[in-house]
Length: 461
Image 1 (cartoon, rainbow, N blue to C red):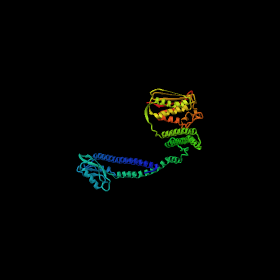
Image 2: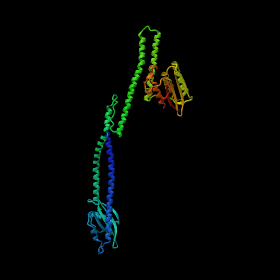
Image 3: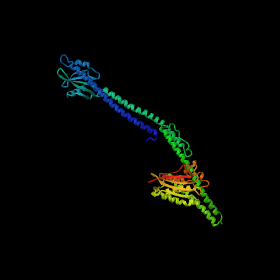
Image 4: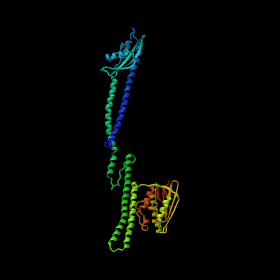
């Protein structure tokens, strides 16, 4: 119905205020009517009892009812009457009520009624309220009646209704106008934030929304949006760096493959050995290219949260032993001693293939950066609710400034050049992701005397 927040706020504010005013006015009107009727009844009762007391104590000398008393009870808004047991008026003050109304009251008196009563006042009055009380004079029973028309009471209630019917719409009009202005002023920072947010794009993520007051809700919203922009900026920068690094890593093996193919086809008289050498180079580059593509695909699916986890129960020590056996040939080729010391019967629930890939990446990293004649030791043990696996090498220690960055994608510190074989810098990031996907962690331990020690923590059953 309303597309503007300001309009909706104004509408609901006005609707709630209208409900409050109507409810309050209705209750007030009912209480005013009750109070007015109660005041009328109290006044009639007081007059009737005063008259009865004076009338009973002051009979005429001739034995008739005291008409002189009536002269003391002259009112401009009520009649005082004395009825005989037969319902006839034997004494009355100056009349304010018409004959028809007095006849109606007399008819009620002939029934012997006492107390408060209300009768119709005819065309000239809104009604008549009267009280009848019995009195005794010189051994005779009479009924004293004090009657008052309800015109004044009806006028007061009518004025109250008019005030309500006129006051509520005016109050709502002023309230709606003030509410709209207040909502517009209160939401002005939101409009400014929206305009600024529309101006921010992929190339201007360094811009921020102005925070006028950090302590109110709108300031908190602006701060939250700025934090979101900060995260988006870092994510965009990471994606750009990722794309640039991936392009660089893919370009090298592709260039080698294309170059070797061009060389192999450039001459007709190449020997089988030369062709075999070129094909061998192309195959190795293709394998490297395949590994990079597979790693990129794995990271992309992990970032999207769509990698299928094939969970099962397996022996962690056996998977670690298989990983060590798979790396022995590579380690032996570089004259590196590879040892494994794992506590037997370590049962774990997880993706066995991914866990083995985690160990292979750490072992490959350790063997790659360990100098010939060095040593790589692997250990595994169980604690209360977790497994701890350590992969230690005797290679050059990771510099302090690279200790956290080695887990970044495509990052390769100075120790990887030029002595170590080339790599894409994806092994450690993938290892950390696999551990975190299983509820564990991978970190480079500090305080190691020689070489490096990677500690893997995985949850135990």
